[in-house]
Image (cartoon, rainbow, N blue to C red):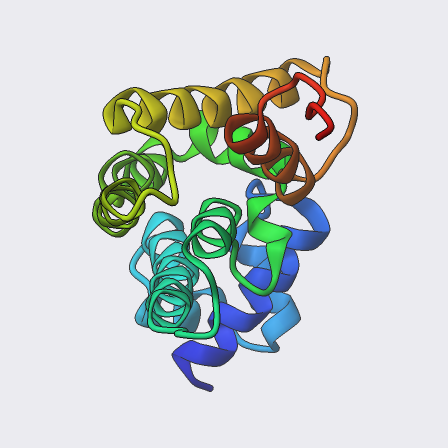
Length: 189
């Protein structure tokens, strides 16, 4: 049994039942004792941190590939970077994220740090676009805070049950469309 297999089964369990699964249930799915699972991961929180690390690493790798893709325009890179998610969105379902925040605050804190601090590439992209005239001049820090605030508000709405059931990916797409294009109809020629 490997750490990767445990992480894979844990990921499947998060998708199936959320973050409130028991280590005993997980060990049964793995066909091993709970003690053996704890030999790989001293706590459920350590297991969830590693699971989150893998997703965040994937996002960073995808972002680097996106930024180095010379075939994409700057506005296209900006749009894609703002809606970037890991390939498997199970952990990033809006209901799952609010559950993570409520029951595993240390793991949530790790994600929160990523969300609030991982903006260097976007800032650089915006500054490059503004200098080249591809983007109008605007306060990048206000833009970042509006995005973060919108993301957190989507998660709050999800946890209160007042959300329409949309995925995080779909909600981010809608929010980014509004941020980049506004809400007024485009005027014709």
